[in-house]
Length: 496
Image (cartoon, rainbow, N blue to C red; front, side):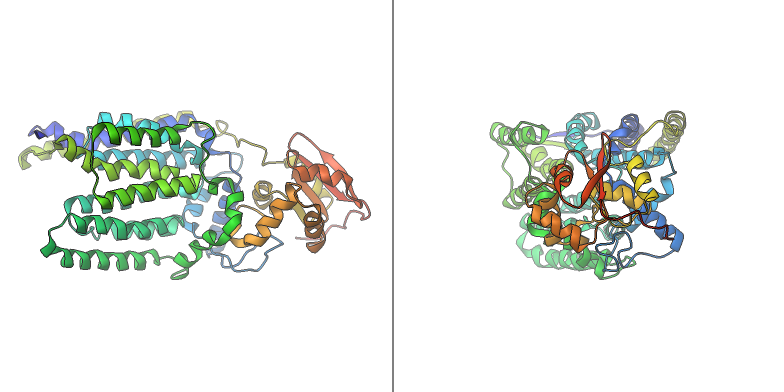
């Protein structure tokens, strides 16, 4: 039995557009209220610094200028547009702009999610589904470029899945989204990778006589999307540069956001996987083999790297929406007369403007300059002030502190750009700071002519330094420990 929900009332036209907008605004205001959670990653600091450099020089970086270990080596900023946006939103000693920008991206993601599910699920129920998905993804909700790319990712992949559901080729209007995604964040390669599997799903559900023509249109779209991803200041180097991170091999396992999912304790991600299995068995929903491949691909990506959990959370419901709706015989159609659509459009526009005005008023009154502060132990201001007075120039520090050093115009030993430093260097760095190999620590100190160390109190290397000959502890607080060579006087002042 099929249940069709059809309305000729203008209010349906209003709800079609306004409900996602309302939910997006609600999500935006919630994350505006908990904005401090987005300011806990030191990568935010160097991302903003790169954006400021781009604005000041009206050019894009092609070589590294922020470290002394890789100075002058080739490096492309695959997130240049997002970095510029964060730099424009940022003001010294005021993190409100970065929080507002990130919250807007999350709100836009929520609105697009509700809109894409509207043909299969009522907005209220879609919102109930969205809530745990956002909670599942909050571990990676940071004021960083990937957040600005999240709504673009959802819109692009949602467009592909909608085309597959209709058994048609994707709209050419998705190509500007791919170009925008490629300028915002290197994750656009996932969108390119999904074109083939989703296109295969469209072909599998199409009549045999139409498959060749449809396959040709999907293939043409795939090549056009690849060309669109090269519509950046770096051109063809953009897709090539973004794949370098995957060449880090074992070093990826040392970077927190690239580690595999941990099931030592039950969390929302683990519960969602168990829930999917339970729902699948209980409901008896049968997926096509192409949708099974898509689902398994999303699960594998999330299991392999925790940073992919938000992609799993946002895209899995879109993959399963039509099969579940078909299984339960529920379709949602919206039909209203053209004459009635005019007042609906006007009413929608008025309501949307009212929501924007209310949101702007709340933002101005709540997101004050002193509202937000950076969380964590990545900002050792007193220690860096001391090292600057001693004119230390080659400082061995942990990667999180490297982001803070870059924000202070001090060249870093290492920072969050792991693809720049390479697998061997990253592995040696972790061996050194974790105390796995003291010889590696000594070699790095001598090879790079380190004149001071700036290490978090929690890493073993900070305690090992207390016992190394030729080094002495100069400073310590709750965040860091500073060691300098005890046989070298402070250097005379030199201009940077």
